[in-house]
Length: 279
Image (cartoon, rainbow, N blue to C red; front, side, top):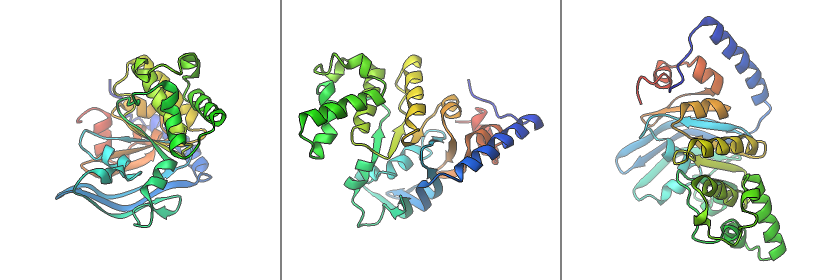
């Protein structure tokens, strides 16, 4: 069931009132990512066109749009993972904490320690639950067992899975359910203490109960982290995001506070997509 656009005068006024309060709060928040005229090509295909988008700290920004519109390409550009694809070229600016990550002097490895990534399908390593979470800290040189134990427990607690696995830490992560595996992957991401968490449709492969757990977790995590989530689920975007960006054919059609995007969109294409008329 798609969420229809609401066009009554009363609903529009309500959305504007909510949005005014949200905007006043937003003024106090720092910009984490600031994208200016960003373009990306796969060979001759112009996949992202003149993207201008700001992401604020300790918020959930939802990226919505039909399949093939550039959502995943954009989110993978934010940690430069997209560059692993042959034939990719870019221009424009993606500023992270005021520095252009596309500058040749900016090391992708440094960026990825500050910007974590959670993928569409859970992808735990074929290791124990403990080793999955300890992997990142070990790569960064932490060898002290006591310190690693603390990081593993804290990360699993933050990912709301500690109580379910605390007695199973030596077991293979593949023995967990799909929803548990995804929360384990989030714990693995948190273990490197990122500032931003990128999520590329993190619940699309999960059942409704597991999806709800992840959504609740995202709401808790945004108190400490900036979260950018690609989702096809309109209800999910409306429920958990503070800001929503609508992508179409490689362009940002509209980006605004979520209440406005869903109840009083500025562009008719946004309204048509949210109402389920295409996509």
